Length: 53
Image 1 (tube, rainbow, N blue to C red):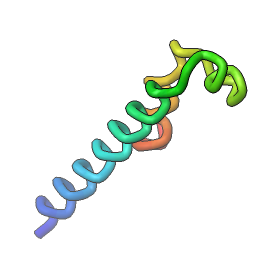
Image 2: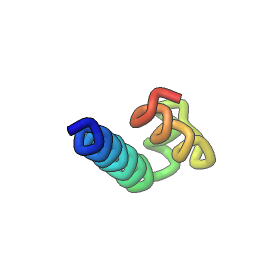
Image 3: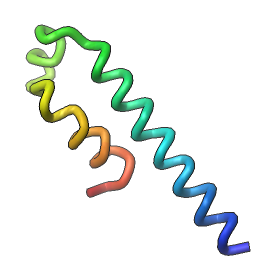
């Protein structure tokens, strides 16, 4: 039972990471600038959002 919980939790985090990455990647440079995000920060922000790192 523990294994399934771990797998489900990891899958949900992976989905959050991918969704965040896709949404931020779709923004143009001006939209990212409005949010004070550079294009090089997108992966770090997606990782932090999903995994709390």
